Length: 395
Ligand SMILES: [Zn+2]
Image 1 (spheres, helix red, strand yellow):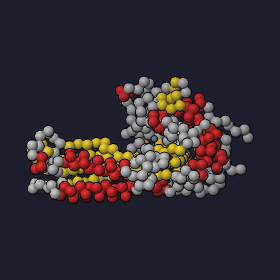
Image 2 (tube, helix red, strand yellow):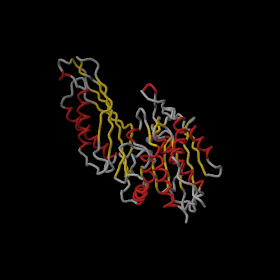
Image 3 (tube, helix red, strand yellow):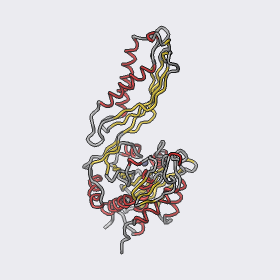
Image 4 (spheres, protein in one colour):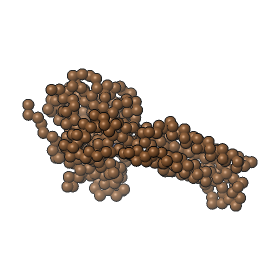
């Protein structure tokens, strides 16, 4: 049988334009429009599971059956994008999908409708060539990745991917293959002190100053942790802070939020314990300065918790992807992702190896004039096709 050729740049362009021109911006999402469009393109006998997440919001799993039902790889991509507004200064309309010199511009072009396009082109290739498989291949399109991850949670609880033994996240990876991603622990801290006339600060307990002291101690603790060979140092940043009412009043209340990014050697449970110790220590020190009208109170809430995850760089999944990557023009250096993906919810429950490998430069994600080089979509489509042909095709 004559094998169909790899998709052309023109095919990548046409498909990606359809995806980008369908507005799936958060917070509405509206991913169901794309799910229904994908379903309409598929032959009816292809196994597919549409999971409704909310009104107009859905996720989709397409399964190509293998000889065995166990194992197999899941390609995962999200269909939602972050919000956008023309008023932000876009040169071309964010849903126009304008192409200039191999580059397609639009919200989601890079994060991550380019990856979705590469998944769909891989699926099309396998179907058109009637490739017979040893084990199943799953194409999983999720909703709501850019917010709370409703889609991947529903995919997990559906059980449809329970037998999968490897996951490829098709998020933009800057022409590289990534084996790890940082975790995130976001905390909100509320501090209550005692107000006083600012001319006599020792009569009060200054909540703003304690917020500053506490956040700095937490940051010092986090950044003293060991440096990961690929992901670099753990980081901590104060990203919100409120407190105080007038220049001449010692503030009785302050709140701040921190975004902490962790490496795989630190569990969020341990990290939380260390933060609690720092808070206890500070309260102990402040015990000596409590005033007649009150004491320092600190309460901490975790508002987001994603573990850092890693697959050994020597694992066959990573090695095979890199070997194929070298043949299709993808850089085989070491890479990790600083931001979390759907894998942060999937991998800790499934305990399977994963890679992040998808078209586009993640530095352009969420930006005004977001764009992707269509040749990158072509390269990653080739990577996915060859990975399946090499590891999973029936002889
Ligand atoms: Zn993304």
